[in-house]
Length: 99
Image 1 (tube, rainbow, N blue to C red):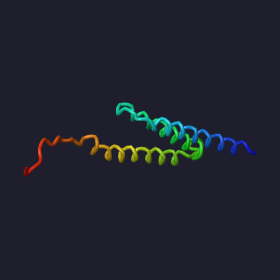
Image 2 (image 1 turned 180 degrees about the horizontal axis):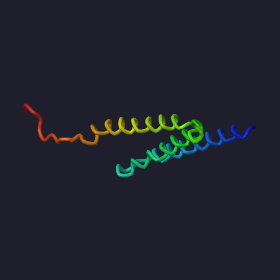
Image 3 (image 1 turned 45 degrees about the vertical axis):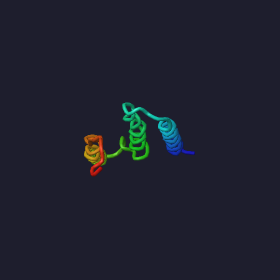
Image 4 (image 1 turned 90 degrees about the vertical axis):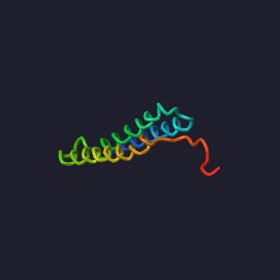
């Protein structure tokens, strides 16, 4: 087996291990304050895929620029999507109307 195939297989196993770790950590109830930490393994996996499979370190500058632009726009889209749940107010209902 060539060196590149061994590296790809090792990267695949590392990605599976991180996914299993993330799944195992997310099964028990997680306090709300520590939930953003669960995004850290996903970010690590994305970096490993970009560096390992997409070979961005060896890519031309234009490819790295487009990869960075994709991450930039993804961050904007996720940020805008989170404005609704983070700013939503829950009002307590004390009595029913009409009774």
